[in-house]
Structure formats: structure tokens, C-alpha cells
Length: 259
Ligand SMILES: NC(=O)c1ccc[n+]([C@@H]2O[C@H](COP(=O)([O-])OP(=O)(O)OC[C@H]3O[C@@H](n4cnc5c(N)ncnc54)[C@H](OP(=O)(O)O)[C@@H]3O)[C@@H](O)[C@H]2O)c1
Image 1 (cartoon, rainbow, N blue to C red):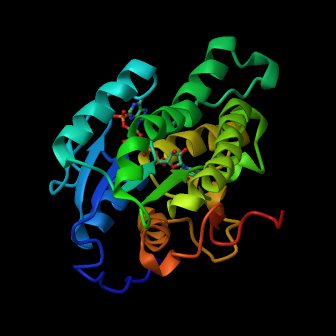
Image 2: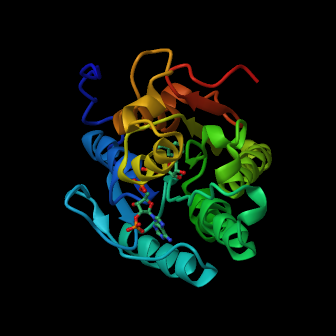
């Protein structure tokens, strides 16, 4: 059972200008709400807003699967915020292929890379001048996946893209550390969200089990709530984590084996 979290300090992120991708639902919506609760000004994007998109954020519709889409969003976000202190690359998606890795079509490998890896690279590149201007204490957080280190065959293309994101984040952290800009990566485990539930349903159908069985092995006894990930992101974005960079934080209820 998810227990109530401590009430956020409403001034924790006061004055911070925050960009979160994929904030229309799921983990991204929880991250947006967590920054709003901490007093930040937040811009988010997705192709479509939903009734769970936090109302306190500016929503700029966009498709991050192409360079043009990312650049259009970056310009609009900068115009709205006038600068940026925190970037959270969260948008991502995966499509399951249960027929074997060889059945994943070529264009799905490139699609997976475009959305789950290159969207973050492109957005960070576009926002980096503003992040550098914001200076020491500004933060980039990339949302990866446990699939980066424990990939399942039907999601091999997605896992490979997330593994690339992990490696890229480490390199970016080293490059930006002298400027006091921190770069970290979060690897969620099984979190209950619309996107992940659909994927888990594919696995459940293939195994002939119900959806709950796909998360029954989480050592802490429950699947993740999007707020579990948002809390980790809030910590990494805050000055409480001022000596943390280049790290990959697993938030999964204990499911991933040590690596
Ligand atoms: N939930 C989990 O168990 C889990 C585990 C490991 C990692 N993750 C990672 O956590 C992140 C969030 O996942 P989630 O579970 O919250 O998924 P979700 O419920 O499907 O939400 C994904 C978000 O990304 C947006 N998005 C998808 N394609 C996009 C595109 N082409 N352009 C712009 N935005 C796009 C979606 O909005 P639109 O579709 O309207 O564009 C939505 O806002 C992803 O990077 C995912 O890989 C999740």
C-alpha cells in the first residue's frame, strides 16, 4: 500500500524554472505536480493533454520524436519561462514484440531511439545554453528504465535506447560538472501508469495471467506509484543532492538485481 508522503516544502523550488517532458499523465504528471507543490514554474509537453495533466503547469503540445518537434518545443518553453534551471527528460514509450527480437521492425528500432534517447539529447542540446546561463545548481535529470540494465526480449529496442540514455547521461555529467551543473539518471521499475500498464497487459496476456501477477514479485510488496518516482526526481533536483552527479538511481521497490 502506498503510504502518504511528507508534505513538500512549498518554497523548495521557488524561483526555479522547470521543463518536464511527457507531463500529460503517469510519471511525468507526478513529476510536474511535485515541482508545482515545491513552488516552481513548470512547462510541460506531450502530444495530447489529459484530465490528469496538472493544471498549474503551462502545457505546450508537441511531438518529441523528431528533431524539429524537439526544437519547436524547446523554443516555446524558453519563450514561456525566460530561462531554465531544471530539465526532466521523461517522455518515452515502448511497443512490445512477442515474436522474438528478430521480429522488431527496423523502423521501430529507430523510433525507439528517437523518442527514448535522442529526444533527451536533442532537448538538452537545445536548452544547454540557457542551463549554462542559469549556472551552478542547475540540473538535468533523464528518466531511463530498469530495462536499460535488465532488458526483456520483447522490449529489446526500448532497453537499448534506455541503455544509451544511461551512458549519455554519465558523459554529460562529466562534461558539465566543472560548471556546477548536475546530470543524473533515474531508472524506475514497475510503476502503475497508463503506458506501462498497457505493456504489462501484453506480457500478462502472453503468459495467461492477470495484470497484477506482473508486479507480484516486487520485494517491497507493491508496484510503484508515479509519486515514488517524482519524489526521487525532487530529491535529485534539490540542493539536498548538491554532491550527486553522474549517478543512476534505481527506484523499483527492490526488484532489480544488483549490477
Ligand atoms: N511506468 C513504468 O513502469 C516505467 C518503468 C521504467 C521506465 N519508465 C519510463 O518513465 C517515463 C514515463 O513513462 P510512463 O510510465 O509515465 O508512461 P505513459 O503513461 O505512457 O506517459 C508517457 C508520457 O510521454 C508522452 N509521450 C509519448 N510519446 C511522445 C512523443 N512522441 N512526444 C511527446 N511526448 C510523448 C505521453 O504523452 P502523449 O502520448 O500524449 O504524447 C505521456 O505524457 C518513460 O520514459 C518510460 O520509459 C516507466
